Image (cartoon, rainbow, N blue to C red; front, side, top):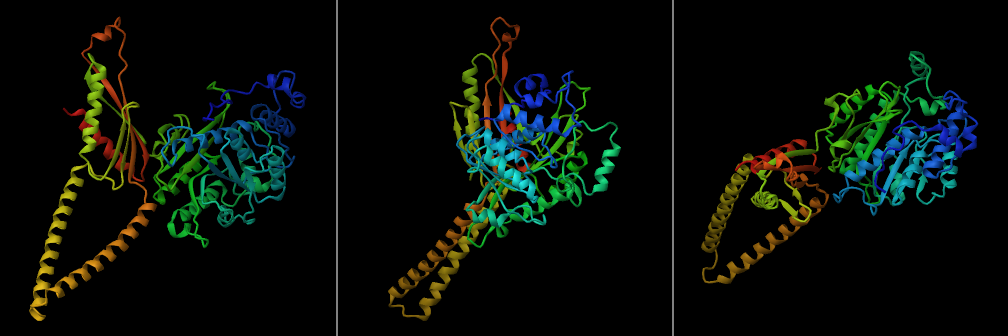
Length: 522
């Protein structure tokens, strides 16, 4: 199903929930409130919400983390939208036929992320890891209790935590591509920092914490944990590192992590930029009532990819003005809009003129692929080589053509000179000698060319296009004849450009600027 709206955007109605679940009702106060400092009350809330809203039945140990369902569901919604926006075939929106494989690092006793993801989307499967034996035991039980053993697999992983992604085991399973890696790492670098954080709170925490130290604490805290994941993801992105002894290689499209501290967002984004990663997303998860004065639980999430498939603005820059995330930490925009003025008298005719001009401008470009669907008023533009539209690109092409022509002339002159020398040394009465030599040379060149072309073809299979965009032509909304605005002589056609693929945001900006100039200049 398409990514649904957040059903927990507002507070959960405890009274209604209590009518359906007697065990939860026992924990509800007479005034309809819940004691979040009581671990059993929190566990009953989690169990009841999972069963009512997702038909999931789970068991939770008393000495491990109890996941808040609204927060965890927010993360799944984000992953759904991220993948819907970055389909490898540039499909627009949710594709029910797309088979997705996810990896949850540190799945916990509940295995809540794989359970929610697979319950939401039938074509999704998940792998999961955890280094705590008790968590693994409960996770396996919860997966089996919901009859999802065929779609959720718990993997063995490095118990020391030195390696987060179990690449070798995944490859042994015959899996060559994972669509998303997600994790909710421990927040704290030490037990002292955990206690210090608790003491600094101006009010008691609104939820009990039953997590074991292994779930709450990791050396260096969440920043060190996610930085390690960035390093592993970068290594996997390198072609040599991806190649396995079996001849297969593991590709992962998206990596992501929830973050509990606002300061961590800056650290993680800077770590990505230091690796020259330009394709990332920053979002926030806000729980609680929409009333501005009410306390809210806020978490953040950073996702990144070493591939070129880019999400739309709403997904990539999914933070509000009150999120606390600085604008400099957000990725480059992946959408661009401008308007073309047309006469209002005959809108269909003038929109057609805009479409013709768009197609004409595309026809002037070399080495690109362009397809426009007039019935949908949408075009797909693909440039394997990058910039072929700017003056600089045109001048460079002219220089290359001139150099190529000069090189061909020199080769021809050299060949002619060599033949003349051969005739002078050989038998002038034996013309077949020249023919044999020429055929031999041709054969050698042909073999070399075939070998080079084969190598080029292999490289092209791995090469990503430099730029892919979707261009939508949106007709103006014509006011009714009774409106005073209908007397206007002009109206505007809207052009929307969506960056679908490419590693260079500057290239997208350049293309948008070029197209706007061409379309708005008469």
